[in-house]
Amino acid sequence: MRDLAKKADVLLENFRPGTMDRLGLSWDVLRELNPRLIFCSISGFGSTGPYAERPGYDLIAQGMGGFMSFTGEEGGGPLKVGIPIADINAGMFAAMGIMGALYERERVGPGPAARDELARGAGRAARVPGAALLSRPARRRAPKATCTR
Image (cartoon, rainbow, N blue to C red; front, side, top):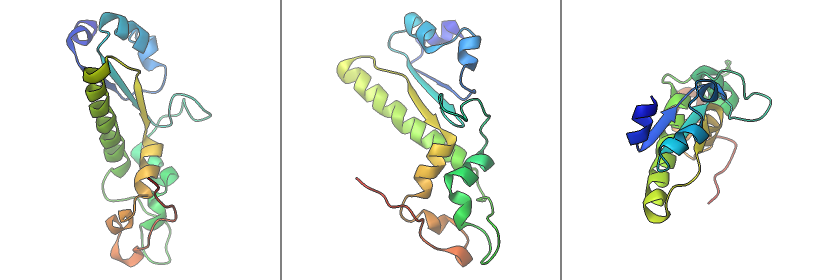
């Protein structure tokens, strides 16, 4: 892994916080091997806070992020979205962050590590206008949050 990191542009990992450190592959170690490396970490609940050590799964992120509040049958309980939407969104937000980091690296040089959270990604996507259109027709209603610029 260290040999690969020496030549790589990007390293993306999806472990619980601290796992890369325990493997001897922390940001600090890898940065010494390759100062231009972009290190992106996706975890269920981020690297700090009361839930940081908990594993994160798409279904948990859907519930905590709000997606399950607008899916399901009229008058029924919440249901998961038919696709792993939290995983997909976390990956898309991470990819956007990586692209920005690559661009910034070419303009001004290496920068900090990037992090994303499954639950936060699901929450962001659930608040996008029109996200309710992904839900079943019986429950089409707008998310309660609004977007700002």
